Image (cartoon, rainbow, N blue to C red; front, side, top):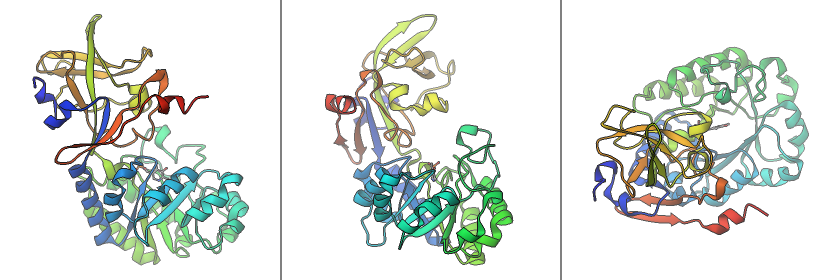
Length: 383
Ligand SMILES: *Cc1c(COP(=O)(O)O)cnc(C)c1O
């Protein structure tokens, strides 16, 4: 095969594209790191389904993690149906506002229910009997500059600030929850925990559990795991609480590819490759964040001999993935592998422009197809 150098594994050159391919060994590597944190710190770790919901791999995930966390009814149901493989598996849920019509089912499916305000707690408390209830707090401690990912940004709707904390209503509530990080290391967490202790310390002593949310880049090389373990231990002992972490991204970081083929090369001031994938449909964060996704064995524009703009086969002019360079010219039929494509991809994709959804597979000793989509998946969301 002529473009073998562009493939992390040769099997990927033979599959139908576009395809999301989960790398079994990389997923296990991440799960082992999280398991080590869990064992040494005593925390419980949940998978945030918002980032990754591929239930075909739930047996591996539930082997290491304590359960899942959901953003609402559908994810809670998926967590209960597909990720509860042990008697102790837990389903947690947080939503900025619950629907009256859904709350009965949510309460039935969930072990922990976290409310975004004391008004929500008051509204649903009587329908949450037997469940462990929590309040999401806003420690008002920004540790990043991206307002779209910063729940502590001014006028944030997420979490109760200290000024709005209702001490009387908090009576009988089991836990506090904060989620303020996004792709961040240990230092921002340490700073956030300090703010939480300073502002909400009085209430921490009344808690059975405290949930540190997600956004911890624990499985990224260089993350200060020792710092995390000792912080969790100190915190749990000081307040007598069970600490939870609920990462999404860290569970599947660098554990999947989006495999695509070159359909056509056009020239207009530069060389432009049209791929059978789409940023808008299959990796929307590329346009939303925005960012330039890593591509296996490619360089920055100009770094290698042949530079191309990689773009999509939709009609959206701005559906551009980015500029990349290669050692050899690209040709029709070449297979390319975008890296780190397990997280926030399958859960966010869409069929805009009538684009097919990528198939989903797992790379083990060989490629195993998990699911292939078709016209019915496109039509089924329309009327
Ligand atoms: C998004 C989210 C997570 C997971 O965040 P990652 O950045 O994927 O780790 C966890 N908890 C809450 C409340 C979230 O909104």
